[in-house]
Length: 485
Image 1: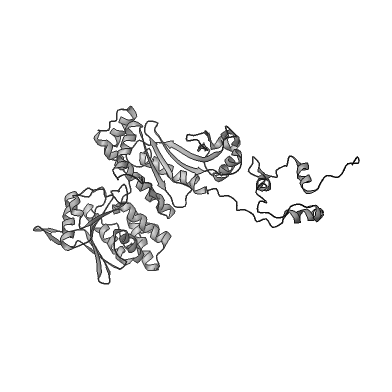
Image 2: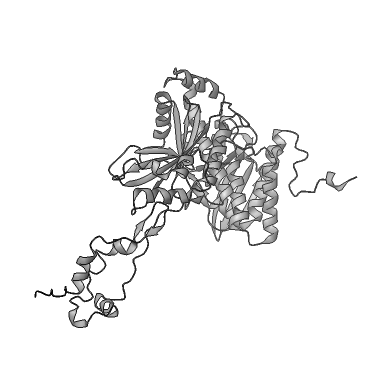
């Protein structure tokens, strides 16, 4: 038998998973075991939940009595530091199974009776933001116990970032964490990625296309919620590839309910949804727009234009920044004291004729916006022709070909002037008695533009030609007397 057909033994095997219950039990045990075994990973997961830095112990299916019932939460995490202990119950769902309100409220009651600190839920449901929970429970039960949620995508993202980017000090622990990553990435683990826009997707999509969507339609709220989940999943997925924490940009003002309402209103009135992703150290946040009526998805980023140089010079600066971008990227320009787009052109045209963006040379550019559009998928799931796939692929292409290559403009540092006008004149053979100037704090103020030169159309620099050389000459040396004098 050829060795190519042999299957390597794994610490956490996926073979033998015969149903949802077995899938859930194995996923819970694997995750909690690695939390206690890999110190850095355990700290990464428990610290945001409020746990202290200490020894992590984990248990599965711990029995508790509640109102003459025997309940078995999927797991329990205990973090000890000196005499202080932090304890959280854990409820896990895999595959398409969703969290149940009654079950969560029962576990909150157990946590309150036992004096535990939190309830942690893990499932494939993705919260719109880190502070929101995908399931609404009786708020009175949260007075003494906190409730947190992690999607399997978040767990996998944190595991990859810890092993690949942040690092694990102990090589054996790093290998153990790698085995958990292998397990969670396997299709049979039940730790699925975001793969469905929901049952209401088709009806809402068609209603927007025909202009019949109303604010009272039942499916509208769920589609908006799925859009927020897709936005967060896109951020997690991109962050996992980049090794940084990518976050959706949320409104600073208003309550958490304001954004869903604003999205629903935009979908009814404009037939479009939008979102923003903030990537650390990137030139700006990426804006994602899904236009249901035009059946197009777009990604854009806005960058500040250089604050010096002619308009054409600023356009050439931008073109050098996006040399790897596709010619179909659109460039919008904005000018000083103007709110709307001043001029627009495709990169393919600008590369042959940069001046086509300069409609009025007297207007000063203040910003550029780069936009990449693509067809919007219609299917609710994943794969070719799906809405989710069209968004994810466009974000990856836009960041890789446009955003990651752009650096913000920065002015050149001022140069120290070491030679005074008097010394410069002496070097040119002018007698000292004829020089009427000395080094002053005002030297260089009027000459700065002359020293810098004028940027040419190709982005280089040409020396500035002085229009009145005789006037400058007379400032240093008086005119010779005429024969008549």
